[in-house]
Length: 278
Image 1 (spheres, rainbow, N blue to C red):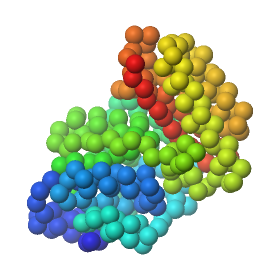
Image 2 (tube, rainbow, N blue to C red):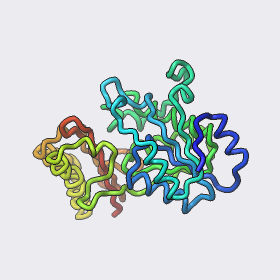
Image 3 (cartoon, rainbow, N blue to C red):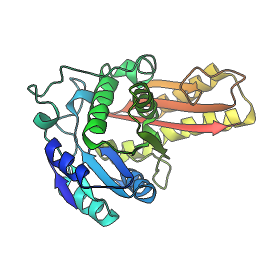
C-alpha cells in the first residue's frame, strides 16, 4: 500500500492507475463504520484510495480540532489488511498552501442552513471545500460517504452535481454498536455513564420512526417527545427534526422520511438519523 503525502504524488499514482477508482475521504481514527465504507469501495471499484486528513476548515473555534484522535499507524494497518491500494495523507500546508487557509471556498446554499449548519456555522463550507479539492486531486470515479452524517452526504451530493464533477456519490448505511449507538470517533470521549445514557439518542429517533410507520403524522408532537427523551437522559439537544430524504420539510403526503437529531452529552456532541419508507 502506498502512502502519498503530496498532490504531486497522487497525480503520479493516478497517472499509472487504471480501472474504476474509489475514494473514501476520512479524518482517520478509523472504526468499523469507516471500514464499512472501505469495504464497499473495494467491492465496487478496481482500485481504492483513502484520504486521512483532519480538515481544520470544518472545525469551529471552540471545537475539538487539537484533540481530535489521530491514530495513523493503526489506520494504515487496517487499510492495508482491507486491500486499499493507496492512502493520501497530506499536511495542512499541502491542502491549504496559503498559510493554512483557503482563499477559495465552496458554499452549498439552502441545505447547509439547517440542522447541524445552524449550530456549526462554516462547517459545511469546510466539508464542501475539502471534498471538492480531494475530487480534483484524486479524480475518482466513485466516492463513499456514511449515512450517519446524513446532511454531509446531502451537501456532498449537491456540490458534486452542481460542479459537474462526474463523481458518483455512494452512501453507505450507518454502522451501529450491538446496543444500537451509531459508531463515531467521538464516542471515545464519553464516560462510562455517558455511554450508557447516549442510547437515548437512537432510542428517541427509533421511537419517531416506529410512530411514523404506524401512520402518526403529528410531526411536531413526535419531535417534542424525542426531545424530551433526550433531555431526560442528560442531553442538551441541538435539534430533532422529521424531514424527507432530500431534507425538505416532511408533509402528511410524504412517502419517505428521515428523522435526524443531535445534541451534547457532557462535552461530546453526538448526531444520528434513521430513515423509513411507507
